[in-house]
Length: 436
Image (cartoon, rainbow, N blue to C red; front, side, top):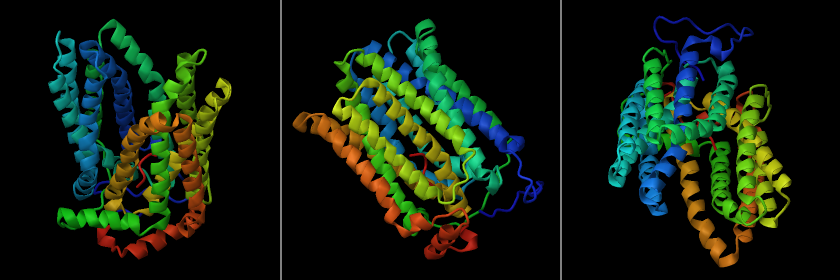
């Protein structure tokens, strides 16, 4: 990816003198802000679930509130990608941080009150979900615009490691807040994290590639054309979407299957913690990876998720399920920074946010499908069948990408990237998946 430094900045370090991303002030500020935001977000799920359960005792009420956040996020992600490419991604991220800060303050104060309104909570989550649809696509141009190309893998690994670390510490912090001060304070903490992130974004310098003004429809089509023109990209996205759908199947059926086993609930918690540890370790290892064929290697690593699915369906011993889940999530933690770094370096800067938004759209859309189909299939055929089917699909589609020429030829020398750009018919002036 070739970009022009903004006025007042100096070119990056000379070849052979790579600087660690955290030694570069723009990325360091971005890293701190995104990490604080991730920590704030990590405390919210438990707080929201407990608050609504206390207020209504209804799973349906929780589902409605969660749906109000998910639906606008899915519908507006491509539009968010266009906005992030068309305007300054830093300013878009700053505005969405401020919107979500206000939203979380409102939710926190509503929960601190004696009688929270589910309608108002749902409306607030709708606003928050809409803001996230515009925020998510800014991640790629922000990272790519604050580090040099040879530092992308280290930068993405650092981002992933920090976010995965918050998954370990977030629930504990949530529990401390919920059982001492109340769930509303978890949302106020999240609001403070968004405010801190917005403050840091005001001083971050991000390289940007301007794009010509076009209609919204033309921008959306161009983003999709960039995805479709790269066979290594769109075939991998199909495999990644299948992985996410399978993860939803496991998340839906897993707790019910282990519930009646000895130590079932405790086993499920340990399994999830093993997954969190695996994610963190995998993302740390990714910083040291120097892969010749990153797309092929990453897709093959994702096939490991079939193992916990099969073991859960077969009623295997608890330790094997826990170990396999930790291994599978470790592969995911390793894959995400590797994949993102290759995408960031391969896709023209002016369309990176749009390409990333389509990536996220496929990934997020597959999960509700898994949530919906798993209970139906389990009721009709038994819980083992959907787990075996999900395992087979993950293995077949992730392994199947090896048959795609673009996947095999996607190497770190940029060959596949250059071929994809030429196929798309892009021009320099018009000069992403998201995590699986």
